[in-house]
Image 1 (tube, rainbow, N blue to C red):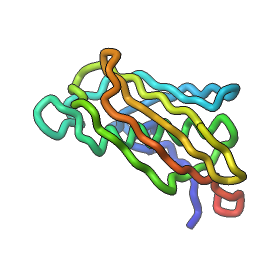
Image 2 (image 1 turned 120 degrees about the horizontal axis):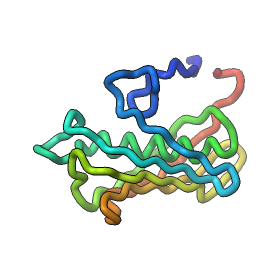
Image 3 (image 1 turned 30 degrees about the vertical axis):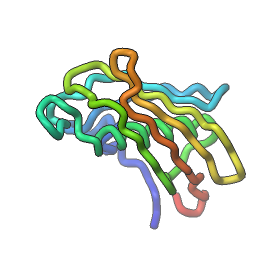
Image 4 (image 1 turned 45 degrees about the horizontal axis):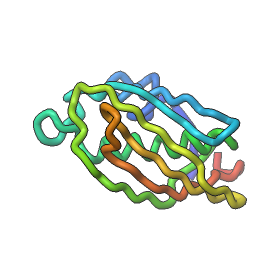
Length: 135
């Protein structure tokens, strides 16, 4: 399967009018990524609480962007998320990720989502670099 970007990712795609519109800043010096955004009610599960799948998607995307400090094309191989507190709809959140280990094509990344200074969810991911022939 060929992997290519058409700018329609529902988390970060600028061409997706129904997406989250997340814009991550990558720090190439320390292998981190961060994003601040307000998640609208359109992405809630329970009333005024953001759906857990949306939170997981943001944490996963942050992990991928942290890896972009070292290259361009990555996919998630394994992902574990821990939900600690509900994320209220319409509130500003910050998502951060950091590469904690690099071995050839395998990256280990930790990410978390904060709201009002409280960590609401955190995740650990194994990310693989996509070989050139798959792009």
